[in-house]
Length: 168
Image 1: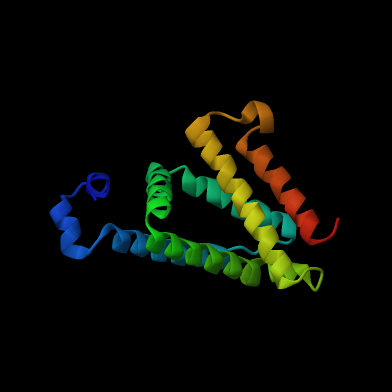
Image 2 (image 1 turned 180 degrees about the vertical axis):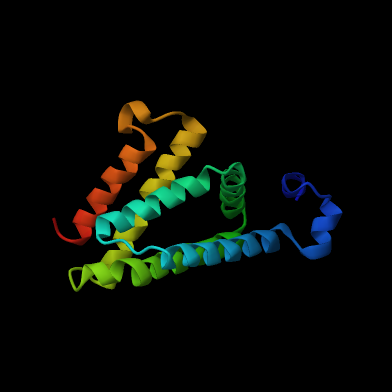
């Protein structure tokens, strides 16, 4: 709670006035993030599946450029590792957003080429690759020597996963 209060530039007492616990704060933040993801997916109107993956990838990396989002991810990682209730809640957040991404964004392009389960797995792998790349860049160090810049990485990732969905 101290970290959260400091990040919000308020006292711990102020946080406790509005929230019972840090878990309640994290749940509210994730609920807001779910709404943001929903808004973003409705704004994606690409001509191709590769462009769709590219737009999602760029949006994710832009979102994670904000220091507060990186800090949130650190806190979530820490809390889900030590709090079973928070872990369960976060996993339902992941499942819900992967399912929504498949239904709202990927299904129109797949046209019977993959089952919903296969699409969920591919979309999860795509997002996991983005998150892993982002974590390595932010927490460990620059990966540009290995994968090029963000643009090159996202373009290749989009091409790879679009090909996997469309059986290229």
